[in-house]
Image (tube, rainbow, N blue to C red; front, side):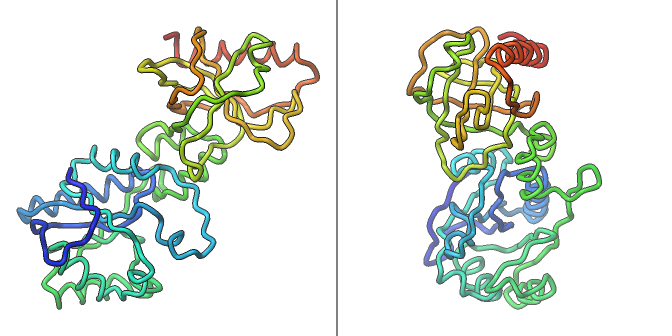
Length: 310
């Protein structure tokens, strides 16, 4: 996949079929749309492309829109590359671009700069100033420009249309296993191991406290999770807690910490990658440290039973 980050003054891409969107998470619905783009491109003997943006357009416009993203820009690019699309076009979204009508965007950007010959519209997608125009309008503009416009089929799973907002809702509810069904992969976080209070070490369950790399990345709901851990080139089984650790009076601070099973090495300041598999339980306040330790032993056994030893 070739990445195009800036627009051209004259068409420099080969003729292509394209779909437009933010593609947060590159979930199963996105992949279904991309496969339709690839199919249309193959039938026409042209290239396939995606147009997306490094930052969500509504955030660029300063509307107070605070989106918790499923994928960082780099993660999104990697997932898009795995789809086999030919081009990932990623211009910066600007206030000037937001003022373009759908027809102006199609004529001045898609047709004039990116050599788009076929435009595939997601079943629920709208673009152009105020997103006020419909598929019929896009189709008419395409006829005027010599650009074919197609309405994509929707992707459904368990009788529901898959969307990024649906995945966010599942993750915030701790349903990481269900979210994986919609994403097509396990949700993950990347960060750095930082100093913590070292309480876990004192009770026999040392933890790596994690500072997430991108502060805009969505953090799943509070609870204890079975996870896969990648650190220093190796993969391990872990149990991870997200929350405020009420038993030790952690206050309002929300921490992310992982106990890596059968692991003793010092990994402070190491990069770490967490892949969520399943939530084991919600976060609880115990009456004593002894009760907490007993529960952590049960949690470790359950995680090991679920994921196995590594």
